[in-house]
Length: 486
Image (cartoon, rainbow, N blue to C red; front, side, top):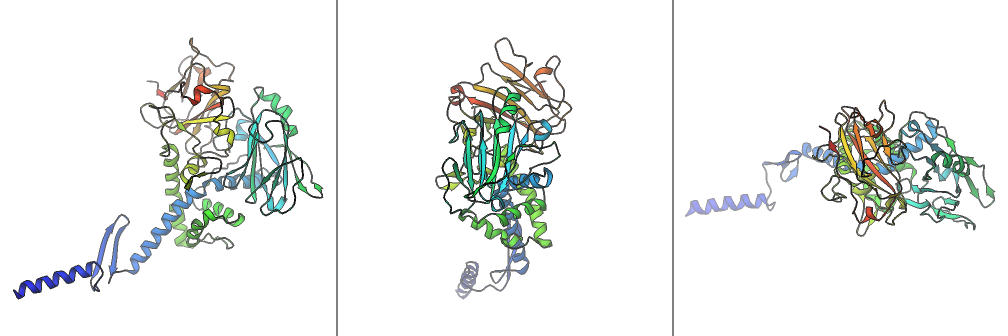
């Protein structure tokens, strides 16, 4: 009887220790997904404390990588504007040729781009003046939220006009005769694409009418006409490793703090990024940031190329919306963190026109990363994409190949990453359908419909609809998957 009582007392004491009701003198350990954690009298050991803080900071940095993608993309372009292009603050530049566009994430091969970036703290209010014409574009903040649409779906309705962009906290009275745009931050991105069928005519007639200049109640500043980019080597791709965090720190230092970002900024403090303080990470922080840049980018790749935020666009295929984020990055109950990362990891800019729900207006982009067999698209394989007759695009359609590693147009000896309905020598089938081929070499007799890819290099495709028509929206017309040519 006494033995049973003693045994029960020992068992009860052990139970109390396990639940923390009694002090434990022995060291305990727990096996977790981050390794073994040890505790002394219930408290984490010094070694475990360090391991947990390292893991906290690593997890936070991995997520901060995803959070920072849209802003880092704009910051890299802004640095190129000043340091590579040697352009004036707020000046618009033209990106017309294949080589000029090579630094841009997923541009259209054929469409002319006119882009400028302004630091409003240095310029003060700035005016973007547009002529009437067939164009579409946007004014965005550094987080790539749309502040104003330009062109056909903008307030100018394609008739041209003057957009007055005001810096944060501007308290003056805006004059009549301007479309007023209030920016929440100091850096703004301004861009338009020319969509007229006659590309060269649009370049000649519209670009001279695009200009920027500063504004104040006392008058306007020097007119800055559009200047050619100059075919210099550049890239707005978010950099790898520690330079990614240096670029993100630029944004943290420059931009005002927004309520939605305060928790992220609180976490970045322990990684050496804090507003108003220099970025000088110690050896531990550098190692964590470098590791997190690798894992964060891997997460961004998965989040982009194998999107889980929505199903395939055409049932039974691997085609998905390329652009899955709204212009304000908001949904009821949450902000679109994964959706914005999925787009801005591989692309730049967004506008209302790019999310068109109106037949015949704007653009829509559908992306493919896998073939019919569910395998990733790779440059050493030859594929056929069958484009059924009568693609639902009132303007034109195009399909473009982009390198997975850079998210920029594939660079090959052919020098053309794209096939579009504007290609004069494209060959159609007897029923009006078109077969487009992608691969390291063209199938015999298919050279006019072929886009070259590089062996050993993954790639993906955007199929663009300019002026999408009703069969696009009701899905009565659809694209099949890429098929291997065996």
